[in-house]
Length: 553
Ligand code: AMP
Image (cartoon, rainbow, N blue to C red):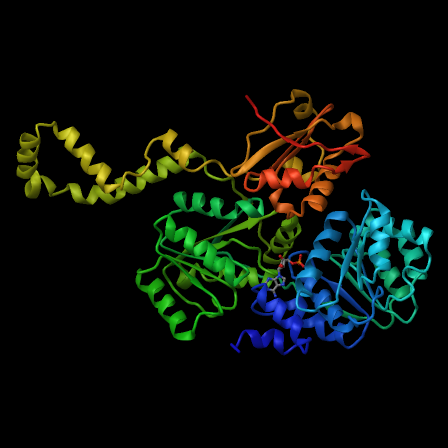
């Protein structure tokens, strides 16, 4: 066992849970996991103050899986989540962590899907129920005993649930469960309404809070970029084109991600390597030495593997995956700006992680400015600048050393000096694209997400009226359904149905545009036909979805 796996192993979770967690590539528990897991394992009630992105799902899922009895085929744990999307995510997380626990089943219960199969799954012995409060109350109205055997209750994102008006539903649900149950409440904020719930329904709860000390990081210029998770690698490649870096460290969350990103970078010609907890200590030292002396320019690391790394050459830190907490953000970006030099830190933020960005800004006491992806013109300019910089110093005495050779070659070949210089340039750039069209073709613009997606799912009015589809994201295909606003459809209904029936990750689905009489959805090009077949019989708002590939010409 490596030093890092000791982190999870030391938590006294069932070995099959630890094995599943390590198989997903987590190297060590995040702060919220470290603190919450022992408390929940010991059976205490708990209030956890943590944001999305801190690893809070595993912080409750792992100890709860440990505490249920797989041989009993009845609901034992209930997780309440504010939205269908979060309920599905949490259910998927449970399934991942329970992969090596035969007999454990998870059911997600939410509105917009038929009730029958959900109830059947509960009656068939699912031990873990992940539900939105509204739909769960519908089930309780049909069968008030549904929750009678539940011993563990988790309220996930409790503040969001209250904001969505679920207070009354929560009270109904509390009453339908045994009083002896364990209750764990997670919330990003603790307003009076949440404290009142805790007062009434939790017994001597232990408090866990991810400490947010104010920290300053003045020498480092910070920026963030909004991007969908499945577009991160393309975004990184594009950013690297224009950033003038000496050495760079990119942080990701899992070992697999270190390998994937490092090989994508190598394929583009960067001198890059992965650094993760699976790599033997002496090999890690070799990677760091190479970064120090310039044999490598980019290291893609997990937090654990990069601990203590001190390489003065590092000018840039890319937070490709969000850190778990503001402290590790500060720690990560502290890898640059060493010894009084200037550094630059970039943070990629997916739609789910916007809150974490705000927390980071609060804790560091600094605004992390938003940047946009450089466009093709900027990439082209950067490439030409690099070429200029590399050639300029060579010009000085070249004529005296190679001028005669040039004369002879142009005469022998029978070409102009311009033609020969152009040929040499082509060779020097390995035939790299140095025209706007070529850059555009080689690097299709990565979709960053739009303000509409940031604020909700309804398109802006003007946009809806104009009716023009937005530019299509890389690797995506546009699909059309004849269902639109006049059928009572909102983007979230389409999203829910496709996530649910198509078995896709949220990030796999691009923009959704709902018009009056039809809607457009961006889906992954890869496996599209299979996905459309899967969605063949899907209904939304009682009508057949009938999603088809949409040809724009
Ligand atoms: P959450 O805060 O639960 O939404 O988790 C945020 C992300 O962190 C999810 O994608 C998890 O898969 C991932 N994650 C959670 N715990 C760990 C860990 N200990 N190591 C690496 N990744 C983790």
